Image 1 (cartoon, helix red, strand yellow):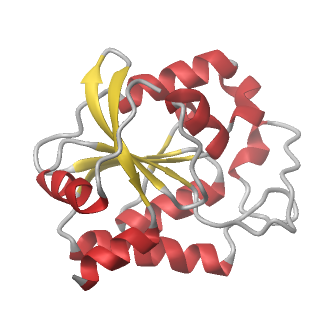
Image 2 (cartoon, rainbow, N blue to C red):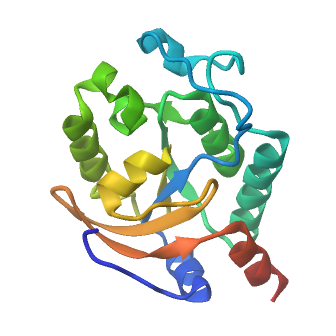
Length: 189
């Protein structure tokens, strides 16, 4: 990790409302009865559950709810990026309400050989997370648990958000993590 952070959920939400942060989200809950059967780069974009693990109905609902709660808290997104995997694209879309830009920079590490290799993907993810997101808005990066762990040192649960403060040049600070339950409590207050 670049620097550990344990900012409380209410303070994190306050920071995000001001903008200028990046949020790395591990895709929402998936259907674990499905398995990734990646034979070539074309397979990573498949939305066919017989080929690639997809979001479950529970995951879709959680991503929708996360997006609605973030909106209710006044948290806005500027640029939205996603791994090319369907489960990540769908998560980004449901949370942000925007069509994400897909990039191999956020590739699942199990398929990193299609995107320049593991080290290259991790480095490109770090570079992206270190870039400023803009005044009043936050960047959203929807990707995978294994990549999140390698790039940030944090292993996220499905649908969990990691808030980072960009510092440029591949450097960022970890502010903290948010779960759906945290957001629901904040909105209920």
